Length: 355
Image 1 (cartoon, one colour):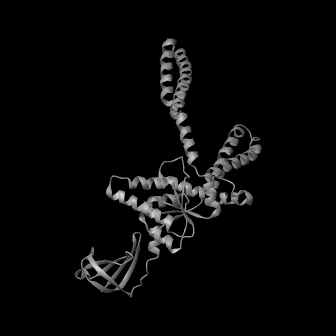
Image 2: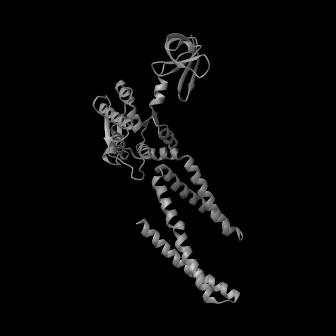
């Protein structure tokens, strides 16, 4: 279908530019007093060649990119653009009446300028406040119509209880099974079918390490379904506009207005940029680590040398790194140290101590 449309556009463009080039060649030949037929033939050939090459880049391909962008555009953003253009046209129509009474050439130029300026300003303002616009429109909906849209899976996800979408990385990580057993998670866990297919693809990998990770993810999913106190469901809902799993997850989360649970840093950033709430287990693990203040004592085993001279490094049970001054000669010993400083980094918490 794409090839036939592009071919048709090339043909139409070649014919149109051929007629235009013929008229231009004839006019140029009359002006120079030269042979009309030679000029017309040369210009017609140039017009046909130009039309065959350039027409799709000016017609079909820009329209195709525009259609794809509109398809992937969030509903509230598209609504903001439509309402912005509509309000801009109304404002431009009101101000065009007095502008049309001005002398020429202002009455021909200013009304068109007003249309462009007001449409741009209203669209830009509503794009910046699209979330407020969405909340306002949702508040105007009758209560009886708020749950009458979508398929059965969507209705069950939005009517019965809140849901959390699970990413492949958080299932393979495995800690979600232990967290769900504690009772801190109250929402249902929802695993899209394309995430399950990605897990199966990883489990069938030829790489042993990758295959073991995929199988562990499938085992964790089985534990969630059979042993976790919160329900874990598989949904067939899919996003046909994209093939990437991360993009599908973000689209579903935006459509259902639910958070995504993941350990993937890139997915975390992309989801936050698009206004999707992210539950990161690594952030949770850092938040629940025990807090140590300078002067407190703790027991740690020194296992390796530090980066600086005379430093030793040990780890607490929760994985927190402890850098011990003058601990280079205490390797493989369990010692009691006094906390001197606590440093919070993007990779986690780091404790500096001395024996």
